[in-house]
Length: 212
Image (cartoon, rainbow, N blue to C red):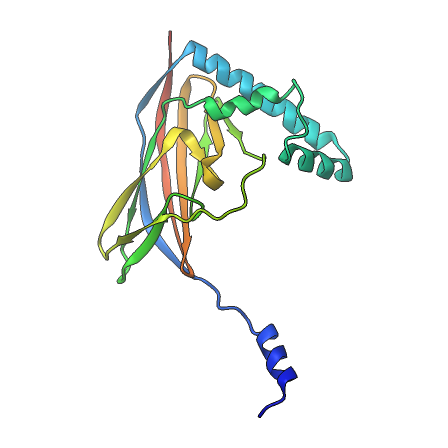
């Protein structure tokens, strides 16, 4: 019988198996014209101003103080009227839904997990009034598994990216604060059963028009 200690050390020092990474093709569909009311644009501008004030405050802090502040913010203990308005971003859905189509050109079935923490969208938005509002508050710690969906070789699935929400649990947001022409792109990632599935769609154009 082999000595116990070498067996224990062997288990402790064993290298974990890296996940398999699969890449799918992706295309993005967006409305060509987005009509946003003057009131909703004004609300988005107020939230964007609060977001900028919040970011400026963080960047001006020394490193140690910045870490304490971020921790307090995460715990909901850093309320301030200068940037409280930024929290209203959770209620700003400006009627912009994107559709991301994933196509499986691989010679094998691919399983993606839709919803929950297993699926993440990452939006890139450029244009005259594009403002990112990343979420940095607290979240519950449980892992929310998504529903598996099998994409057969040559098959495809279309996913909805609602209200320009992205990041973990869709808690981050993008704001459209001005009329104009914008470019939107979306990357997708699904994690489950030791497999990471990724896809990135090239940008599409949408035009924001202000209406009363």
